[in-house]
Image 1 (tube, protein in one colour):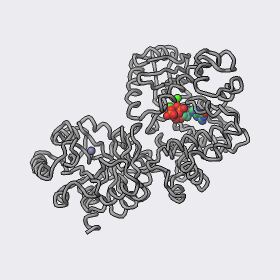
Image 2 (tube, rainbow, N blue to C red):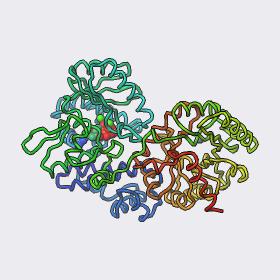
Image 3 (cartoon, rainbow, N blue to C red):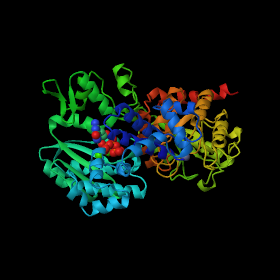
Image 4 (cartoon, rainbow, N blue to C red):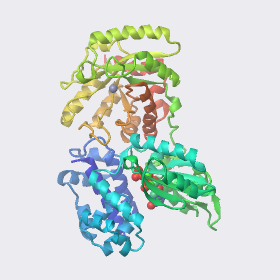
Length: 577
Ligand code: DGT
Ligand code: CA
Ligand code: CA
Ligand code: ZN
């Protein structure tokens, strides 16, 4: 049972319910939100008890029962009933990325399709355009692309793959097109861990010229639509991108609207309605329809009586209530980071020396790094034996004498072996500043086994941190069956730090788990796992996950001065003695 399967069922159920005018919109939203949370949840919901499920944000009694039903039977009665009530085939249409409920219904009324292949033939032969009102060629192309995505597996791509593409597009547009203001919006601006498409918003005195540049960019593989103020293209790697050009006076309102999330926007609009205001992508309008703001995004929040809410928080996960109470977190920023506690040198599988890493960190204004090469058990990574680690420690002592105002911390990434023991003896670990413990084998072990390994590592007084705690690789490998409730519980008791691994393929902990770690008072560390100096760039991904998790600098120990950092990490040596 994959969590993504449960997420899909909830999301389709939401879509089916949405077609029914009489349905309660809150219910629809609850399913959507649950789908999102379950998709990002690092532990397999199969085998979790009702009480455990209810601890997941957004999951109450009713949804917990449905999840158990899905885990057991592969579906749930509510979903089956909704499918029965709405004509067969409609749910197939609803499952196509980018196809909304209204269009789906319009198509279905003309063509009660039963398979993707049938739909593909209709769209490919322009039969939809010919017979269904409001369907244009563009819609058909979107449907074809959606079908292709479904057939290929997933329509979403990891943040780390999409962001560089988006930045390049933006740089090009700034350089070549007559844009005044320009911004990324959508899930990318919120730094969601997976991205559906790239949304770009701009203003210009000559929107047509901007569109021309956009559709002719070298990165563009296919132009799906080219309008005067909006175009859609498919870029290399199959990523879709929308560019909209709006009036100067609407830029802020549009930025807010297209940044989303949709659920956040709905909340804002509801608040507006209560104040007799209308909020849309064009601006904020009073009772008489007079525009009272919209040039800047701040306008939207200010007029609603709210402080500005950072894009990373806009997921309808309590941010509006917090804003109303003046309790928004003072979010961590890149500037708060003072160093990286998980790096690899040439001695194991990295590409640089400790000194090269240190100099790169100094260039970034950091105050310390920890060198944490792999321990010997990890054969593939040329792991270090106890003797080689001791030799490296001496080398680091020598380097530190030459470095002014910067410290290389001595560390290791020690392998947690299958028999729960660590790969290096305590007398070596005790001499190191930083001991990152991590699992690199036995990924498919049952929950109790793999959780037991991590718990055993945390109970070692010298293990400072658990690295990439769930082991998931975005789009490649699911998390191990680790019981993160238990891991976080023991982390809190043993004062062990938990890592947000910022490596774009990992992002582990994810935002939801990191927020729980914060609530439990667990020290959190954001590390890049650099294998080459350029990887320090990845820190911004980790900081983004931290921001999405509502973390403040005080929750993240690598914002501390080195002395305080070590004090926190070595506290457990006293507790566990
Ligand atoms: P993605 O692309 O799936 O990763 O996620 P988003 O959030 O970028 O979604 P997208 O690209 O469909 O739309 C961009 C933003 O536009 C979205 O975050 C909120 C806004 N938006 C789109 N459709 C609607 C809608 O039907 N109602 C409202 N209120 N906002 C919408
Ligand atoms: Ca998007
Ligand atoms: Ca979009
Ligand atoms: Zn590592």
